[in-house]
Image (cartoon, rainbow, N blue to C red; front, side, top):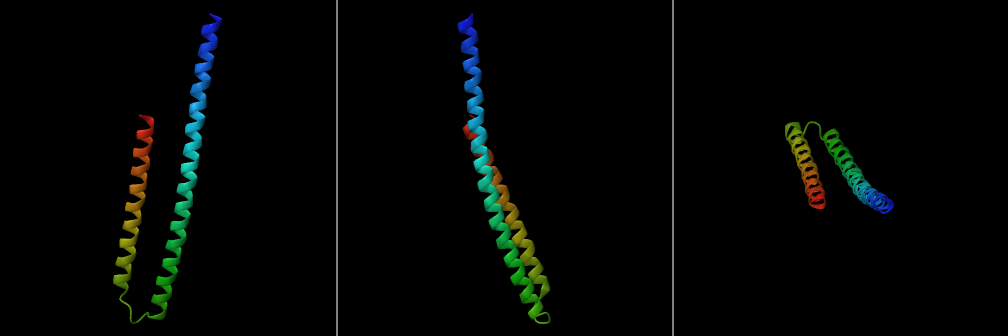
Length: 98
């Protein structure tokens, strides 16, 4: 009976160790994703600054409708990229799980 209890304890510890390893992998992945999102945010902020400078400098010459359309299209592209990243992560998680 002592052996059985010891065996159960060892199995439980192995299970906990695997969970810790999985959690560490998730933390690494989330840190990488956060870094990528920060980079994308900086890029978007830079693009916004450039567009606003262009608009301010040429207020009467620029068609603001086309700029708004470009901004909307850029937002849509960013949403689709984020969705792709989420789906890739979900696929990776499922592949790892099974």
